[in-house]
Length: 277
Image (cartoon, rainbow, N blue to C red):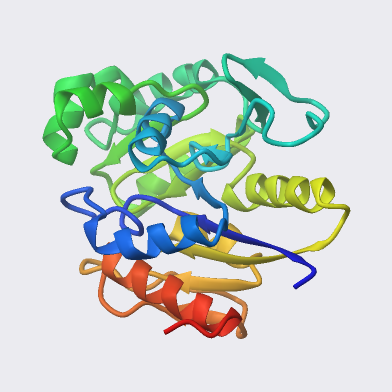
C-alpha cells in the first residue's frame, strides 16, 4: 500500500472515558496499532503537560496537537528534516498556530464585568476548582492548568451571553470552542488546521505519498478535523448527540461509548484495510 497509515484521535470522551479518564477498553486496539506500526497522534484540547504525561504512560512517541489546535509538537528527530517555522522547546519542535494565553486576559476581565456569574476561567479559579469540576486528581489538575495558548472556561450563562462572548473574542482575533465539558478561547485556529499541517508533514517526509487516515472524535470541537480525514469515527456520548458533519462518505459510529466505541471503530477500520480476525 503506497500510503502512510495514520490514526488521529481526540482524548476526553473518545480514547479516554468521560468520567473516569480510563482507557482500558481501548487497550487491545492500542496494542494492535503499535504492533502494526501505525502512528497514533493525539489531537486534543489538553495541554502539553497533560499529553506528555499520557504519552509516557502509553509508550506513545508520536507528534501531537494541543489546546484545540493551538500548537503541534514534534519529538526531536521524528522527521528527517525539521519543518519550517518550528521552534525548539526542550525535546520537541513546536509549530504554533495561536498567540500566547495572556492575550485573552483583558477580554475575560471585561466579560466578567459585563456578564456577571456567567463565566469562570479555570486558570484564574485554580487547581482546587478544576479538581471539583472535573474529578481529576490534584496532580492531573496541575497539568491541566498549564495552558500556553488558550483559556478554559466553565460557562453558566445564557445563549445570548454566549453570543456576546463569541463576538468579543472574535473581535480580538480569537475563537470560542465548545468541548465536551468546557469552552475554550484560543486563536483563529482549530483542530483541523493543526492536523492538516501535521498530516502534510507525514506525507512530505515519505516522499509526498498520500495519507490514509482515520480521525476520531466525540464533540463539536472535533468537527474540523473529522471533516478532513479519509475516514471519520464518531464516538457516542451519554449526555449529548453525535457531532454533525457535512461530509456524507467515510463515516463510522463506534458501538458503545468512549474507549469501548473507540476500540470498536479502530478495529473495523483496520479490518477494512487488512484481513484481520
